[in-house]
Image (cartoon, rainbow, N blue to C red; front, side, top):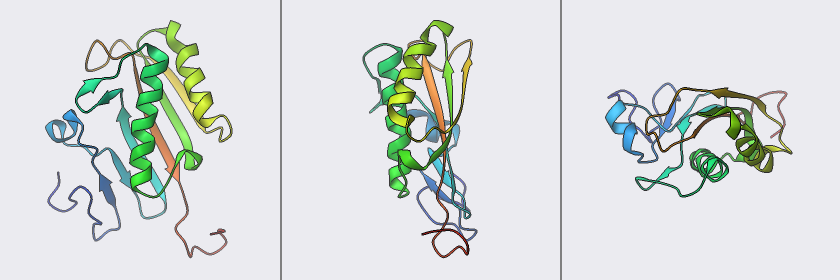
Length: 148
């Protein structure tokens, strides 16, 4: 945690950082989500770890849980799934793409954000098979030419 930008506080430059209390946030020095002054919110990689435990189930269930972690972080900043403009999905097996894609469609089918799905060699815990990142946008109120 930076002395200039404590987690959960509004910094003098308008950047706001949110922590979910995840086990790696403090250990590795990152925030769950960062809200920039122009309305863009970046959500760090989310897995199916909740309260220090990996959620039960396969790739679909892990994806639903991971998206839930990200959406919860957005909620702390006043945004939701409808504000998501980009998703990134990292899977450890190409064969899991349909399950993860199904979870994505259920949550974002009406929103249709830009999306990427990448097969990776592994995640931080070998029991994890999917990790997601979100980017969301909502223009700050009072911006000329942007509906409130």
